[in-house]
Image 1 (cartoon, rainbow, N blue to C red):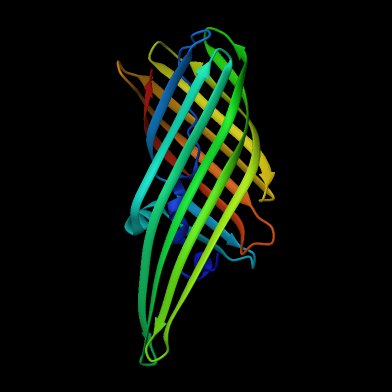
Image 2 (image 1 turned 90 degrees about the vertical axis):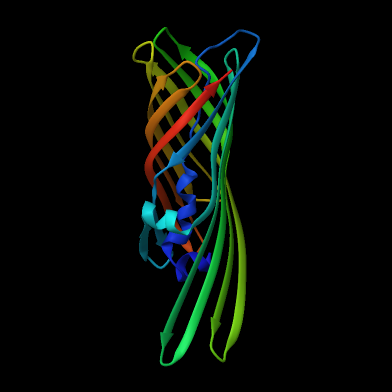
Length: 247
C-alpha cells in the first residue's frame, strides 16, 4: 500500500470501476435458467484517506491518462426465485514521474493492477406486475498488486512490490421497478465486513429496452473502511453507462 500513498492518488484510480452492476434477467421461466450479461463504462473519481489522516482525490480524467487496460463486466443467472450473480473489474495502470532537485534526478515508475469482484446468491421474496425485490448474500474481493521502482542518480534503483487481498461478506437487496414497456428503474445496495472494518455499496440506474439489448445509465457508490492498514478509507463514486444482454 506504500505506493498508493507515496506516488499519486490517481494510481488507485483503476479501482474506479469497483462499483457493482448487478443484472437480473427481465423474464422468469419456471424450472429453466435465464441469463444476462453486461459490459459497462464507469466515470468515477476515487477518494483516499490514509491512516495518518491525509486525504487525496483522483478524478476521472487523471485515471484515463494513466490507464493501460480495463475490463468491466457482470453476469447473472436465474432459475425460478433463485439468482446467481458475478461481476468483475480489472484495471492495469502505469505511472511515472521524473524530477530534479539539487542537481539530482529522481525517477519513479509504478504499476498497479486491481481486481474488484462480487459473487453472490439472491432470492426473490416479493414480486408484482410492476416490481421485483431480491435479498442477496455474497462476498466481495478487493485485490491490489503494486510494483514500484525508485531511482536516483548515483544512488542506484530500489524495487518494491506489495500484494493485498481484502475479502468481505456482504448482505443486500436488489430490485427493479417497471416504469413502462421500455423503461425501468433498477437498484442495488449492500453492506458487509470481514478483512475490512466495513464496506458498503449503492447502485441505481435507468434502463431502456431495445430489441436485442438494454441501455442503462446510472450512478454507483462504493466505500471501504480499513483497520491496521496504510489506507484508512477508500471511496469510489461516479456515473456508469452500460449495455445489457438477455437470453
